[in-house]
Image (cartoon, rainbow, N blue to C red; front, side, top):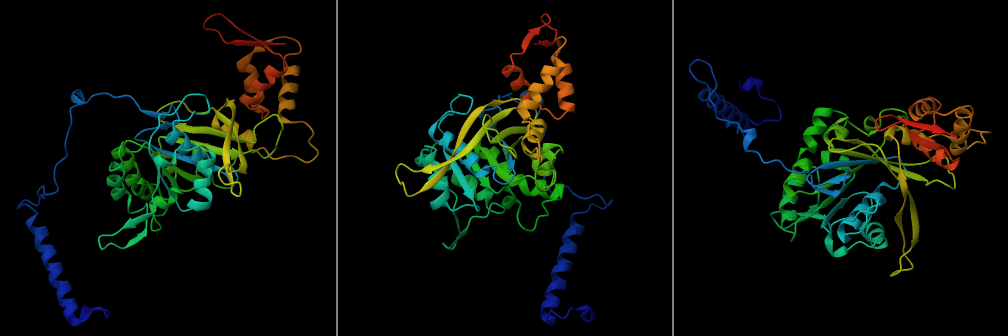
Length: 388
């Protein structure tokens, strides 16, 4: 056996290695019954009768957008303002402020971990700009070791210990922000492999369940994927979109029109509620009242928008064409004027034709209101009928 000893082992180390190997083999032999069947030494599954399980309702921080005990993803292209959006959620949750559609958040404690932006000159000023209750917000900054030394918190390894820290906060926590979420799977995990990514994200999912808080991770949209299924456009493995209960997307419009918001926020997927729809928004920068020398951004919400995530993204990502004079609004208006010039038509038929021409359902509805389209319903169960 000595002849097989690798060069990096001393003779004593090699003997110790072989002894340990024989010990493991003997232990394995003891775990096998005479007939070759292995003994049950790994515990047994616990089976629960469905009859004994109490049904429960989903607890929403923001109905149909942020759910307690669930993992969420917010993905977006550059300049979409993803971090500012997520901080606006943290601010609203901490202070019990209003959501974009007018409902009110219940005041909850918030945790923030980020490796993207500086806490003192970026994160806190934005929270102050958005009227957050700073007493309810804590930053996950360090991990204190048993020897008393500290190191940066690593979401890829330290999530289990964060559970106990979160539970020690009076009242618990309602929201955890992780920016970027890819940090939670670690550098040794191939983020493009589904099985590896799912396994690496499990501690984050367990954290959400154990603390009954909504966890929202920030990531990007993959370049060159315009037009594809929105959930599949999330950077990295498909597991990011599959594991998240709700996937939200943000985008900055490529063409700007004075009458429309410059950015959109929508749901690409939801396993626990409706998908699609969303809100227009803008990112506004201004000096802080408390510190005029500090400029910070905030989210300015616009009206709700309708349509699927795919339609809304297609409209937002439409590239400006040289020599093109018509705006998207004008195209939709002209389409309706021509389509309804002779007689009224079913709304579904119009929507299908418009979609084939690259006009989204949201743009079509806005145009119909602007040119005064009359809308009537054919009985109780019939469809809508549009006419000029």
